Length: 242
Length: 242
Image (tube, rainbow over all chains, first blue to last red; front, side):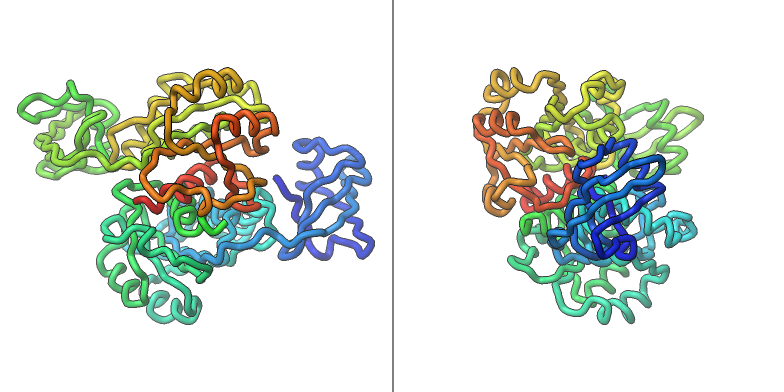
């Protein structure tokens, strides 16, 4: 935990915060806080700063908070992700959250196993917890919005255009002819990136996404696990913007 | 497993291979092979191609192999990595291997816990198995060389220059002034990238690496887990070369 995330209502007008439970415990046991020590804090969807430890007794942690900076800048990216197996999803959601992706659509595809949509990992509380882990890791306060779409075609044909107006649309596909360098926009255009299942998209899916303006790009012949592919693709497309 | 990796001595001159154990079992149980079916195969440090299933009985799998292509091209990158905690290392080694990194130095640093060097994950058989997982995933046959260096200063001052002659040397550091775009070489120069512990390098380490020509770059204010940082950094630096 590199940032202690506070709810806006936890912060009194005098900047004092009283915490108990998971965050107080983490501060005591992992960060081994002492009175007077500054911790990195941030307010959910708000600013970040420091919280000086006023007291730490039993299960209670009291901080005096000064919010001084905006959260880290965002790369301006949304991701359309073929729903990975639950074990991989547990790693990918914190990673997408840490990387500052604004919106994630977990989408069905021909090569996604139906049963993945029944996973407990997709429950709102579970996804919320994974998002929070990513924010605490990256010192961010703004969560990505996560949507689940179990029907590929209705989403792509009826919803996608209105949900992601404008911007560039790219699709990672091993047999695409163009490299990242050839498709990557020079500038600050918003980006929507589609990342397929490990077995790839099927021709029908490529066609439907193509009809919505997705341009294919290839990262070479290597097939990557989704946990590796997601940060690698985002690094390639927007890592240079940092 | 997207590639069945063969040892050169397993391949008879007539192209026939007889397998048993883990690979035969995986082919039967996960890939559910049938006679006549082509599997992707590759020879350790050699070419890749297809192996047609001649028979699959009991614990034995017989393939007729045709090697037709070189393994995927390599990005020309070596990585100096502050040794991560064992759990993270287990994810990072397959990832580095899948991404085609040529050489990985697992290095001590002030913010690396001493005990990490006693981990069983660092045993040669363990590292070898993790490397193999990455190659089977990425359809590659050429393993990275992995070196373990428990003393930072002697490695950096006495070994590094001879081990990595020429090429560009970069160091990821959150407070560096320059972005990836400003440091990334346009072309096909070899790259040695230093990736620090999650807590960052200490000033002494930055100084010593700076003296060896490492140029700092920042990926922004977000602090990433090593499992996310490694593919993100490699994507940003060489993903465009794909």
